[in-house]
Image 1 (tube, each protein chain N blue to C red):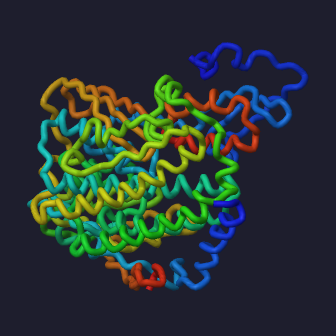
Image 2: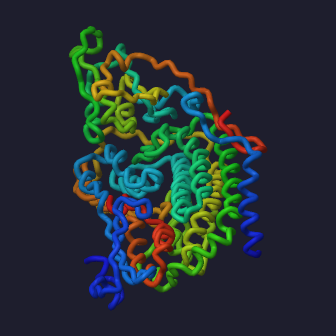
Image 3: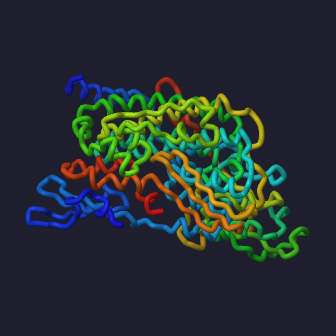
Length: 165
Length: 380
């Protein structure tokens, strides 16, 4: 193959893309859809459930204040601190619950694996940026809120190329 | 021992006469990554070269001595976040032997799929940087965009785009999501179709061929002598791939073909990873077909598991850059006594001073990056 033919072939393969659909995801107007409601863990089988490792969700009626999540995080990021909560739960004698610093968290999900009481899960919420360091610290009350999300884009593959539909 | 000690006599950085200029490339330079390359040039030609890694040393090995076998998982995959499953693989295999746990059959197949997906993700990133080093903007945009197809798959499996923390002693963290086989097959097939298009725009491009052919030639003897691994070794004509020569997990049940090229120049070193990506697509398709359709993927384990007693393990896998080993010494406590990672990047770097002698300075980025070197992994 000659030099000229090679260059023309190279240019041609690029020009073809003018007729192909755009692959770019237009974030934040479009957001990717994830499987499930976030990473969860079933302590009875010891196997996790697939999902995005995003912001945590804490179920106050399940948390016993056993600190296992905090101990699991000690070797990873030291992001979890146990803090006093004003409310009184029947199963939580010490009234302590995890408070998570997302400035430190690496989203590995080992705290979710450590929880034996179905109290700590992860959600599909990944937009956690804040102007202050204090804004990244989520108290137990903030962690109990279920995020409201609109994520519906998926990769679609057609004859004219792939696109985020 | 410094780099200059292992160089052939007469090439070390000693004599500097008036014609020769010393040039620092890096450590923060788009052509070097987090690393400094001290080159001595005579006009436009390199007469001596001394790579100087060590700018992103994080003490991963020391950190591993203070954490138990489970909490070591998130930080040990940090050296190469694009290839995080493969970096973690030898540690996980070694920890399983020390802890004495069996891995379910389905988990082994899931690991192979994740490992191959990660190899492609890493190689696409590497290829994108290689394209921009050569001033080929299309080759930067296309691989950077197309690797999203596979990152999307890994995100569905593990819940994170990079740094998946998915492999764990005892299997994998979670099972594949519902309907994953169909989505994976569709996206991998499209991915393979896309990377075949790179031939016209990049690998058959006469401009690339004239720039990379016969530059930085590493002979077969030298490739073995310097201890290079992976695509660098295979591009010099040595048929060596751990997936075939020393299969781990279920690679012995899969049909793996090794891509070998004889030339040993920059062009061959950049083409072998591209051919390997197509082989990875084949492996993923085979693994999806042979995988048990149901069953557990993780052996139940306490958050702080106990070891069986003092033990020493060395495990190695074929990563995106070459053979990656992990040596674990256990003294019977819940933390490892010592974790040593033997990384392909550092071994491939040893060949670099020899390759650059007599090359033009403009060819330095292409020779350097074709060695499949990842600065963060070499420093750990």
